[in-house]
Length: 364
Image (tube, rainbow, N blue to C red; front, top):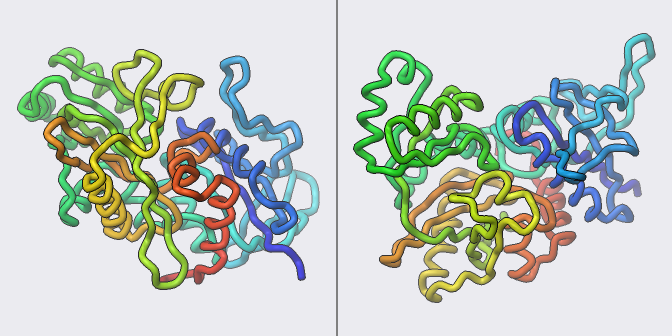
């Protein structure tokens, strides 16, 4: 029997392009080639799909971030069919065969936000991770917090700033932000990897921070600062009718001197540390794991997610956010949490592929 064909898709048209490549490199190294046939596919920064070349770079080298090598053969995935087609101007299109499952190691807008999931749904192709709705809501921090509050999860205070609000009612936005108390965190509503985030201590810094965030997304979130330790938990879908499982919780700490978890703290060497299990009371750890599963289920997630919390000095847990496709290198937080819980990275990759292969296409 032929081996299942897995298309690992990476890159994309957003500021998390390089983060996607770093995760894809780890996945491509970890996939069992005796069990699966693998097709590496890059989405260039202009949106072009290409078959990855042998020269494709996946890691930061000399401080330079990796990008998709767009010189590979252009690809298309026709709607209503799972066969990849390679084509180049002036040449006859070549069908590369069907794909059994897509592993989209992609983050941010036009990727993790339900767009590629919708494309794959239209093509009738199974894929790893959450569906269209969970991906879209999980990407939009404002709607995410609304869903989590409705599910009974405690959240911090925040203000949503839409494009029209900032252009026409700036003074009202600033007044609402001031009522949160200083400092505040300002971030794009639909971005990840700490792109576009600033900490503002006064009105002047707030206006600069909003303008900076708007470079990534016209919709912005202003959040009250929460004093507490950052504790994270990974959640994994189970086979059959079993409930989702939560990893051991882990605490992330900044080691590079940054004020908060910015891009460098997350992705450059020796800038952060992870302690698993987190040094918190056993009953708090169990409560956090249960809350993480509740967040996963409230959003109708599939595959894997990472759920982030603050643990306050008073011993309270406050939901921060959920990532439906978290950073996925072998050294990223979610894979490390599962490795410490007893599921090493290659087994985690295999588990996610098997979950996708066992899932029905279409509505479920």
